Each structure stands twice: as C-alpha cells, then as structure tokens.
Image 1 (cartoon, rainbow, N blue to C red):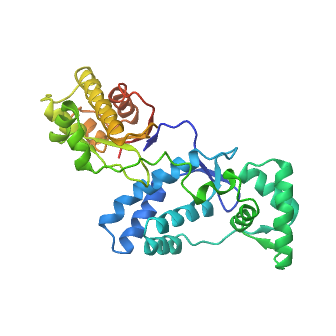
Image 2: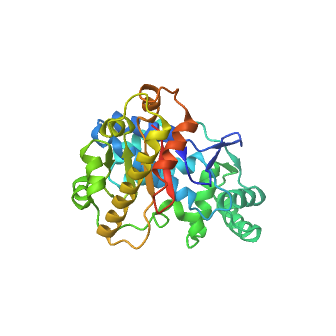
Image 3: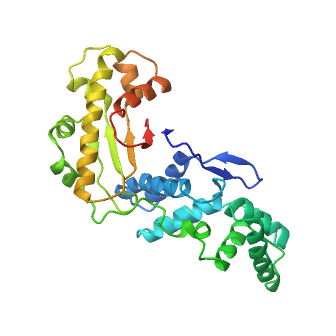
Length: 313
C-alpha cells in the first residue's frame, strides 16, 4: 500500500521506541474482530474506519504526529461503538489487550508527557500536570499508564481542540448533506466513466458519513481487455489510454461533487487491486512497485485534486 500524503503517522511503543503506523495491520485486526462476531458482510467497514482514523490523525494539530497505541485503540473503539458495533468493539478491545507500561504520576513526568504527546506549550503542560498530579495524589496512585494520564489531562482542558480531537469527528472531511449509494453514483455518471463501469474496469464506492470520500477501484486486467490490447502490453501503448481513463475518473469525481452540493473537496482514494497480477500476466514484468506507481501516476494525472490515498492491493 502506498500513501501519497506527505505527513506520516508514528506510534510510540511500550518501551518508548517510535515506529511508523501500519494501517494494514490495523485493518487486519478490525476484519478479524468483525469476523469473530459473525459480521462477515459488514467487515468491509474496516477499511473506512482505518481511513477515517488516519485522516483524523494526519489532521491533528499536535506538533508531532506521534501517538500511543492505546490512543489509537481507544479511538477505534469509540468509532465502532458510535456506528453501532459494540460487540465488535468488545472483541477488538479484548484482542488488543497487552501489558501496559506505567510511568510516575508526578508533575514533572506528566508535564513532559503532555508536551510530547499533546503538543501544548511548556507553561500549559505544567499547569495541567499540576492538576493531574494533584488528582492522582488524592487517589493515592503513584504511577499510571500514559493513556490514563493523557485522558485525565483532557478532562481538565476539554475546551482545547488539540486535546480531544480523537473523541469526535470535527477533523474529518465535512460530512455531505446526503449520502450516495453505488447505484446513485452510477445514475449520475457521464458517458465515459459509465462505460468503464459497464466494462468491469471501474468500481466507485458509495459516499458514507463515516469517511466521506470519493473511492475509485480500477482493474488493470479488465482495462487491457476492454481496450483489446495484445499481450505483452507495453508502457508505450497503455499509458495514453490510462491518461484518457484518468479523464473519465475526473468526470466522475466532478459529477459526484455536483450531486452532493458539497463545497469542500472530498478526499479522493484510488485502489488498483490487480496491478501486480497485471504486470506479471499481461505486461510480462515482475511485480514492480516502481512501475506500478508510474502507471498510477499516469492514471491520476488528469485528476483536478490531490490524491489522498493510493493502494496496490
């Protein structure tokens, strides 16, 4: 999977180390949680949940995009419960259970935690840390998990958006006044993108309120067949055709925006699920990440917006 966003999210491990946030791993956990509760058909929601969370984290006003795993899990659980899947939230919480690192609950330690994780000034961190440490002292608690201390800090200053952004959806793309099903979208498509849909080349997901976005799925092997290309397919012959197909994607995106009467640009996502299979079986090439990215860039060159998310699987 390739992310086209410049800002990357990082997770702080229990031992203090920092690693990149793996959206694929989180989606796998979510799918497993849906399947464990017998909700196989609803497991498609896993991808939307991950996209919604990723978008929120990337737009956090936190100075550094570094988050605790417990923060990520808590946000996912809130999302699951908020959209009506408490049983999935329960399984997700249970499967994510692990030993929690504890730190001292004194003012100095808590202040350092707030500065690094909430992005607030040293002065504000010291003030909040004093309140948190005082509350912990009254409870006779000398050490606690960083997540608990962060939640207590938010309790004392809920009016700051940077400290409770994970608890709501205010940083998600503006929610449209209406949603669109795949059938709704098909009916408003101009001729060029509709032909791609009819040929099995293009699929466009409906617009939901969980993560309002335009999500294209483009199937390379079907595209080669629809264009009657002979194998092996060369870059020279397919790239002009891909560029023209990209114009059809832009027509579809504009039609969706017009139908929603939505002033903001919705994030645009593209998946090429069979790109590596295409390269191997149709183009006579090894599965090459660089070549896949090059073909994707040709396909998206006509989009009049920045591509938010690109997936090769």
